[in-house]
Image (cartoon, rainbow, N blue to C red; front, side):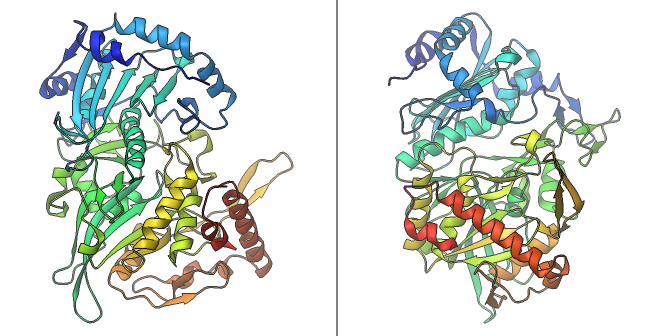
Length: 543
């Protein structure tokens, strides 16, 4: 069945050259955006938005059977059914409303650097911050860059009752209607770029990246590439931008990216942005010094954080939302920033460390070393908990997202198979780990109406403890032993961490532990069984 497409000829032709479309210099955008901001004690800006998280439930992927949204909800199906009417209304609006046009390049490489164009309506003057903030995260436009052309049309003032995000991945076009949340622009371009990267034989990964230098037990200084997967609010950016207190002579980290990279078959990980989009809840000077120092620079920008009448910032106050956000600049990372946003091929390192960050609160180990099959299964499982950045109505609930990536387009089995091939091909160089930034000990009771109540809170692993685990991994200071519950290799001990504190037997009886383990294993088997096209060795690695 054919599908309804946007009129690209109109967008790139008549509309692009219409007098109601202006190209505004970046400094002018900044000046106009600051007029609608609250100035913080740091001299940077905070804006409050009407929409404070991504409109995931109102997003539809449009195209043929390779890409379209599978099993749409009733609301998504309604959006799909009304596409012709919506496109007519948008096309009419494009000829009338004032728009700003801004162009940028995603990434800095000669292989795959998409050329991006954002059209943002100025009918709401305060929304001039959207092109300003997005322009601050990308690189200067290069019309000769080797990559696809991607376009987003942003209309924040669209009727709230008709809010929707329409994505045409093959055409490289997204319409954002009725949302003024910056994350829709950022993720909209990255979503389309990851699809185009997959078509080019790469794999778009929702992961941060960095280079780590660590002293080995024999005294040698080893250099590792490192990529860290994780859903929003699990600690991906925190640990991608952490130095792990690697303080021996010659040790250190060089930060490359915090959000999305494109992995090629030789292990190259191409970066995408120069601005890092961080969650600000829990931002702490002692726990996250690199992020904190960048966040207080003038070029940092904020959305929906608490700023009082004196300009005083309180990152812990969630009165406005649990999804307060900030954009920090790569150049503000100081001596921690890498020379390039790209990781070179894996054979140029002593190894590539792949860390998949989950968040579970009962019996899952704090750290596990995975073989390629277990790693691919964990990649497909994408286990975590929902955050206010994705769906605030389900925040705290268990969630599984393939590749820890809510922006996958196309067959998820192919994502897992391709990741499996890459890891298997470089198994002598790629080390895979599952890191649990949750904790242990949580106990939940469900009443007769199905309402969940936490009767015992989790004993959570702190940032400094997970950082110590990562430090021990890169220094090769862990003795690995097999644990009986899941068949993983886990640390016997970790310098600086009392691993006994996270022993499930401290919190549960043997029967309770067995129940939690069997329930999790059954959930995993059921979930993996959905991927009919996935390699059998991946599926059976969890048996």
